[in-house]
Amino acid sequence: MKINRIATTILACGLLAAGSLAALADDGSAGRDGLPAGVPYASDKDPVRITAVNFSPSEPKRGDLVTAQVTCSSNAAAVTVAVGTIRVIVPKKAPGIFRTQLRVPTFAFYPAHQTIIVTAIRTDGATVQRSVSVDIH
Image (cartoon, rainbow, N blue to C red; front, side, top):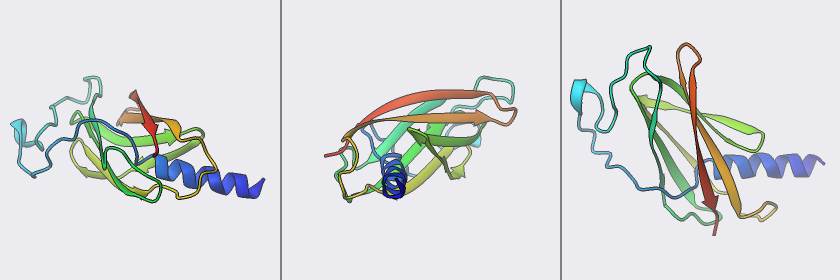
């Protein structure tokens, strides 16, 4: 039972950084309203939005180091990612930009196809979610 829990935790951490969607350029240039490029302005009362979920490499393999970036509206205070019952906070790098790096587990104690739930959270607790399907090769 303990080994199964450890395997599930490692799986979740690895899969939270895996997936395949188009990548945004991260050249550090500022967009409108002094925000990072690609981050739409939103007031504290506007709905929070997830505008992009990007992974590199886009087709991860077991053992790969994967960089995940979530781009949200400027009013996003936090982002979490979850696989099954495991949830992890993604560090905020700039207004609307959340990024992390994780290694995909090398052992196959889990199915290769998983669904990642990305949640953006506004300061008052309002949320929005996006699902991302992932296949580990």
